[in-house]
Image: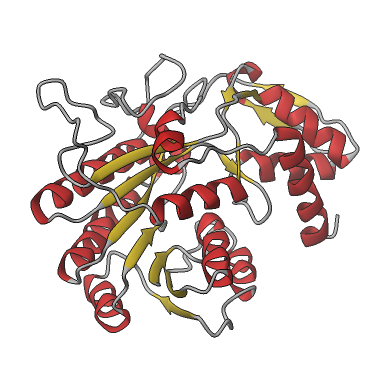
Length: 335
């Protein structure tokens, strides 16, 4: 298939592009290579496959409607995976405009491209952050998600609503994937696994928010990519059992679906740090601090809908995943 993937210099996008190329798909990648974090890491991810004969790359911003339209018109993708976005909860507290441009304007341009070029299926990244102030555990796609606690979370919920309107109005099959705390080789340096590994390896103290009482449904990168591919190959269809008098937020009478992709096994943050210490071979001083604005204490993915519809659920243990991450970290940074 011809598949357009946005964010291919990013953590998940690069891993997905490689998998699609390995199975014989033709991939057009779009990325704006911004400097939200070290661009050299983005270039290094991209260097692993940018010369593949099945791959073409465009440096463009999704908020640039003409650039997005040109990519659709020239490449004529059959399916689209939108992973490009301004990421990060804490950054959204001080730089809200970046989220409005990338996550709302940019996603709107992707929807328009799909609409006008008869795309068979759009899969897009949502986030576990949409569950916001919810305290019912585990988080299920059937739950209401109307109380976001950051603009980042609100932008991802908005993406789901925008996608549904296009599924309803234009029959565009769309699937939103709520990723839960993705980690592993080539991960983002603004996320806790890389931040902690850096400080542990240098013998510097780490900041542990919520006094270490967080738990997270850490999900290994390979499991995330497998979930993306399984859903990409399973275009959304109208739910024949959808009841408009008792609506299910995860389905619709339009070709629309939302799934959680998480490990379904929340891990205490202190346990995650302990595993990093063990694999890096040194302990670290922990500065226990209050919870930060926009953060949530716990996440836990109910993946029953994903398992039911596409026959898949993540399964990499936290022990195996952290060990693989540390092996990559030591090799890449020569530490």
